[in-house]
Length: 253
Image 1 (cartoon, rainbow, N blue to C red):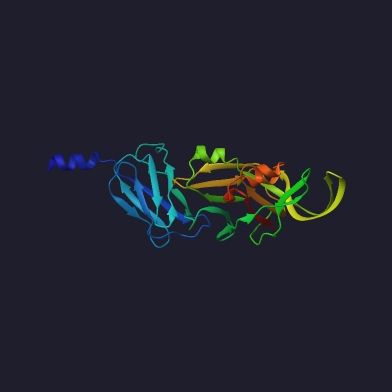
Image 2 (cartoon, rainbow, N blue to C red; image 1 turned 30 degrees about the horizontal axis):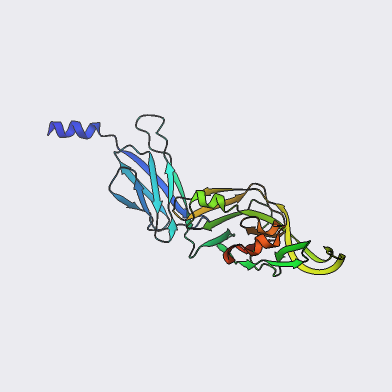
């Protein structure tokens, strides 16, 4: 009995509290919370909160739920012996239903549809662009973020040579031809300057987070692989696989 009391007195039980929400700040109830190295599973309540009394040292904690991409947090050790752990805040990205680009809107994903790239011009000069105006919209004034759902590995994604370009509309222009310059109706959204972005893998096999490095201004934009909207040789563009002869436009308002 005395030994039992001594062991209980020496037990270092600390409290770990936290919050599980989606990326728009809505609580995620019944999310599973796992402490690395501990077999027991815990769950968030209806408000997305959890409280765990643990004797094990806590270094990494994972939160997840069916239909979401899990989130992993590193937990710093308490500053003083006997202190509880600092509160954790988990932010879960919903899993996209299918591969593609998903802009993070104010309250939901904005799925960017693929548009076929069209070519207008002559053998000496052509414009590669998009004819249809994007229906998908995001808000201006802050860096834009996207979830890119893809089964490509990071090394394969690097070879994909992904670009994000601001688009300009070209209506009519003079185009160089074999018999000299000629008037042409282009009627295409074509690539202007590239927009710098960062890409990182999310804690899932098939999801990446893309974030522009600067706030985006109002205008038309598009993702495209292999820099196809800037390709100057029409033959190179036309020899690419059909699934790469597309771009994924959106409008920033």
